[in-house]
Image 1 (cartoon, rainbow, N blue to C red):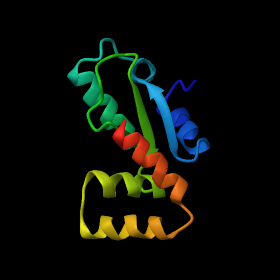
Image 2 (cartoon, rainbow, N blue to C red):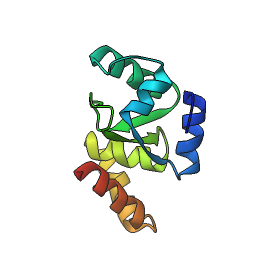
Image 3 (spheres, rainbow, N blue to C red):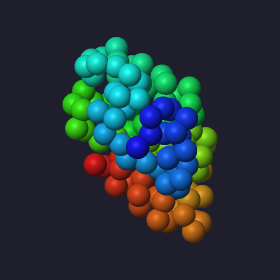
Image 4 (tube, rainbow, N blue to C red):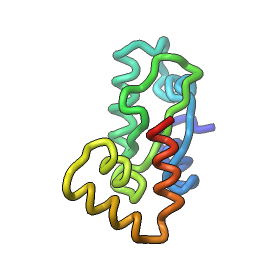
Length: 115
């Protein structure tokens, strides 16, 4: 288990850029108390400053809820951005994935986004 954001990023990288973690662990890494809105916002900012994004976009307040972490700027991160923030460029990225050998990644992203 990661004790800080650098170790957490290593875990995300070691899991092909997609990592599942519970909110209680993120809270502990943040060295925070209750998962109120300010703590969740701080976690989100810390993840972003360490090059990671999260799904769902709004972190849950229950310590047992799981979130998916991904590396910003990675192929998975690009797909998540394309799905969650539709654009012409994002559409092109999705079409490229559809035409490539990344079908398994796209299936995994769909599962994550759709719950």
